[in-house]
Length: 181
Image 1 (tube, rainbow, N blue to C red):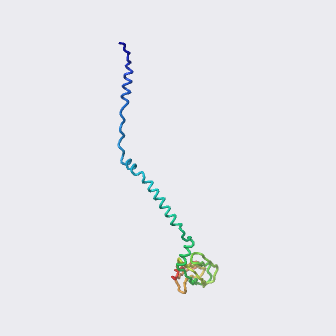
Image 2 (cartoon, rainbow, N blue to C red):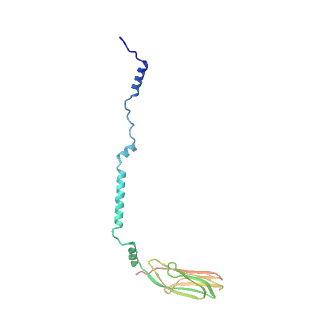
Image 3 (cartoon, rainbow, N blue to C red):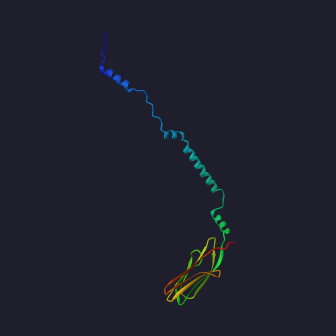
């Protein structure tokens, strides 16, 4: 009987190969968040489609043949009240006023006169509306003992002011509301 000698290292190597081959390990159970993500994969798609749908509705509703913004503004202004008022600015005192400033249009445009003899008067027609209008007067005093101002709207004094002393300033103002139609 002839036996082939076996090498002991060959046997050990075969055992190592057998021991390294293990049955496939089971994967750990999926976490709650993983299971939730797998069940709701469609949710971002649904939200995206809804956002596109809303955008299309807004776009088509905005541009469906309505009048231009300028036309809307003109339409609203024709409905809102406007009115014309007589505004009288008066500055009283003695001597000269170095400068008098007053509002001419009810919104902020001003005019000024310089070196004017007192008393001084200026009557203007002011159209206000649909918002309110402002009537405002500012007068500087020269060397006289005092300077006074009055703003009247449609014949009614609405504001008066007095500034005592030389080189003082006085201001008067009024808010004018448009008359309803």
